[in-house]
Length: 173
Image 1 (cartoon, rainbow, N blue to C red):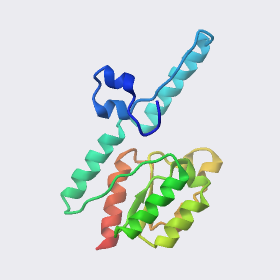
Image 2 (tube, rainbow, N blue to C red):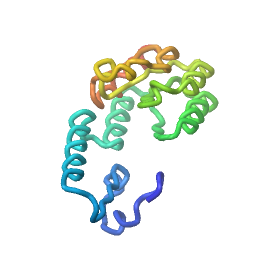
Image 3 (cartoon, rainbow, N blue to C red):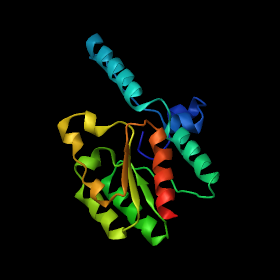
């Protein structure tokens, strides 16, 4: 498996693309213990409770429907690489984007590069988090990107993306 490419195994199994694109591959060997398996299952359940069970495709459909009802549109982009996120922010500016909704995830707490890119574009930006970082570990309460944002939406689950779009559209009127 490679990031950005569909798994040939899951494809051969006949799974739909949206399932393949949201799959996580976990490998075990004969050396794994039952305790390790149990810990993994517990961690997956905890993540599902914390972040919800919707796929990125589900969220994208909901946001597109919300925006379509308001005669607006968006471009969805996702990456786990900081440099690609910077490129996406700059592309939004150069391609005439009106604003940005961003979930910087762990880069929230570490990325001056994202902050600089957002400040350089000066596009109205709304920061969104599925959970509320302020209720989690102390280091998660720091947001570098917040300085470049007109608002932060947190703790609303995936509904936060629609709320972020609402705030952005209001700011653009």
